[in-house]
Length: 118
Image (cartoon, rainbow, N blue to C red; front, top):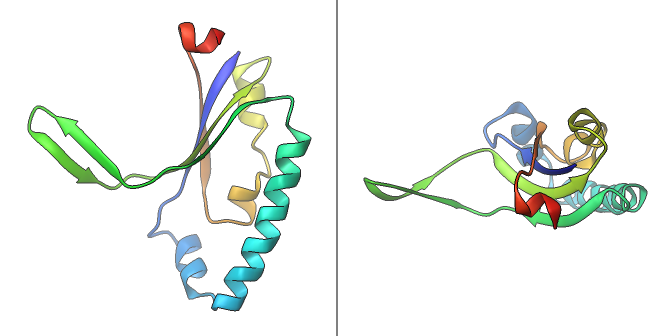
């Protein structure tokens, strides 16, 4: 019952355009509120969090054609435990990354094999 959660964020979306349009003072205030909300969310869900994860940076893709820079929507990841796949997904309802910050979704998938048993 261990799950990988990956937050998604399309940097060309209306939510991101609104974020980019904010003044620096507005962004700082939003960051402050968002970080406090993230801390509170983590505290509330600490028994479910296996690994806090963190932000994801620029992506490189390897294929038989070589190594390429790619853009995707993967933004932040974490690992959680829950009694079911549905329960794991529902952990993220109202998460600050999607309510305060401009992420638009969280994809949750079970970890399979030995990694899930650690």
